[in-house]
Length: 507
Ligand code: C2O
Ligand code: CU
Ligand code: CU
Image 1 (spheres, rainbow, N blue to C red):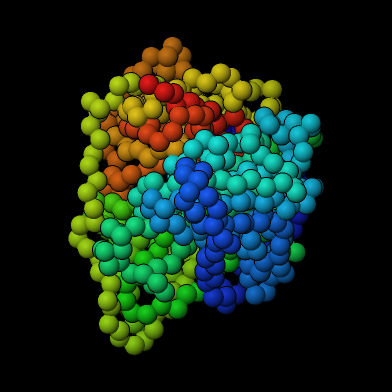
Image 2 (image 1 turned 180 degrees about the vertical axis):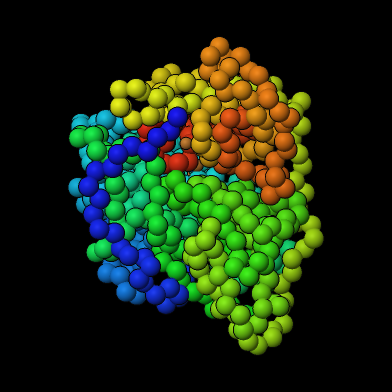
């Protein structure tokens, strides 16, 4: 059973109830611009766009009345500059580590990869949801120290969608991302452009990240009460930032908007509603458009997941509409009074999403998500397939083959499971008898399998593995041969053994 561990002496936090909401305009992350061209690694005669993005310390205002907050991030904003790529047009990005050499958040040297002999400040960048060769994927052990840089190659051989880049350094990933190391990476294609969805000023990214903020405006990351072992199993803050800002407002016209939402939190799940009871039209998920829009009053978004939405303000001239997470208002839309012509459409069908049939799979892997509960007062550790990071690879799919992964969640929590390199579909979820399974490895189902929600019927790269259930996904391992990882996207879990390497092997 998960139990909340004791937390050591917390400082005074910012009193959010005393801050005036909706005084800051919602910022939009800037677009990254290439600094030149370089020969393509795939074909030396072709020149492709070359970007250079520094990773550095900077200060940013999260609210008019709060002192500037120290961030570590990309460029000079959290989220960092958005990379806009076109499907099938490769780019190169040089990620420069210009960080200081001392970390400002509490490192736990007991964690894998963060031991005493490792430099405190390390980073490596992963583009979440991108199909890239292993050498450019940001393998957690491929970190590098301040003063160094790495150039990564992104082929963009995949459909239009919104990906995101973030730090992936072994053992300190949760701290680096909490410090601000994340940004968006949008892939566009003509198919999607021809749908005439809201665009330009009417297409707005919403990056959700919550933080604990101290009274002096600085990010707080709590530590456990165990001396020398600060790790805690989850991080969640009261301050929900949207594009790096606390309770911003956005002026909109009375027309349709497209919102591209990322849950970039360490561990918090968001449950979004609109204060006036209006519905969202969800048009896409992690890996692009759904087959058709799905209407919903409430959205659940786990860490790592993206949701592509259309919201129609056309009947709400002059209204103030808030977006809420549970009871908390996180963003205010101010709808203009004037009626406007809306040139954008919300098509009834979006694209073909062929369901992958189970018979396509040549192999099924049963993989547990479990919690090791030490009675000695040690923190609980979550494991994938009962294995720790450093144990030999156990998942080794053949390139271009299809497999079913049964994610048997024996814990009390939902774990958002993410696989690098691939996109997949969710087959179903089925409740099982956890006690029996833990006792003698026997799988006894205690209910019927339920199909994924309508909004989960598209292509995914992160799936909510619900507690006490077997969640089945079907995956085609196309792309590249080499070593990748799969892990829980609750970063505290990932940093403490809930991550495993996997190999795509040649057939
Ligand atoms: Cu969002 Cu392994 O990453
Ligand atoms: Cu990823
Ligand atoms: Cu987890």
